Length: 504
Image (cartoon, rainbow, N blue to C red; front, side):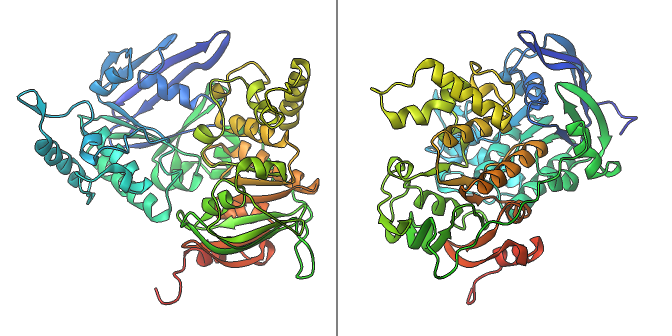
């Protein structure tokens, strides 16, 4: 491809926010029919580069050339009309309208001034069929799983004359079969000459799908490489700018014997039609990992033991005393806190400062009449910024402007400020870079070493085994096995997670 003309080429791109350069003289190119990965730690400049080529951010310096023509987009709509479409990690579709209406949103065919619904469904069906998707265009989008909604978002993106398709963390909520279906669609698009920018923190997926990779670090270009010529360890070191930080080994925490009293004991937990008759014990200083495919009941279990989802059946004890966890506030009062897998909508308040985000739950627990003194709030927040290594260390910066990994640290700081005894983490490392993942994994170990019980949920089985003392396996809403993490490998855990129940 080096002899071919790039379909998209960005040269000398610079984007500044005040005195800080989010992009500093970065060059980037994509070729037709190629899947190109953009890699770097959180805060490296990936999102800024995407916004620059899709019209969401203006360039302070630099040139963007698309299909041989210099362009400058004032809005994402202008970029889309020129052939650049984006599908974001958080699916920006309308769940309360039909698939067809989502595919042709803003471009609905009209007849005599009114939307022609029959023609719209037919046109949407043609787009879906072209991608090999068997989806009823007249069905309500909300009735479909996340994977189908992700593919509908891609169908909408390519329903115009697309030349460049940007996929921002498209697999973060998909299971293995759904990822394979997405990859099939991507390969079908590149066969037509579409250039695909694939942004993901899953290295296995990058190496399976991508032809080329560009690495950014601290807003600067590290280099562009052919994926097949770059070892994974070298890629990670280029992203970090240092030798790969190893996960800190620690002595495994205590397990709960049959005669011992755990910190939390759940029996026969049934809730939200997603978890059925689950038994879980957690001891102080223990990390219990939860492994299961998407839809296995992982999140439902987490929400049931933290008071978010009311129990339909079952019981929960804290230190041997039966408790009624009928609200998150009641759980917090008992020292049980929850970090949602969706930190954007159920975690970080993007418009509030880092200071406000860290102290939010503590102030809510104290009540409006017992205000935390401003100096104490700032001292408390600053201590957590330093303890967790939140970057940049600016308490007054809006939390939504931080990288994903640092937003996760802010959320953890908010929960740890409550001095909990049990921390339930649902996908705490989803969508963050390798370096930040290791930092959070090490933090979980340090918290357990200091006596905190942790329930740790992750779709990455290797991560579950690395972090946990014990692992529980969920399948189809049922807890089917529990074992010490040292007694199983990633491959054998995958077999346990994926195998069908007897009789299926």
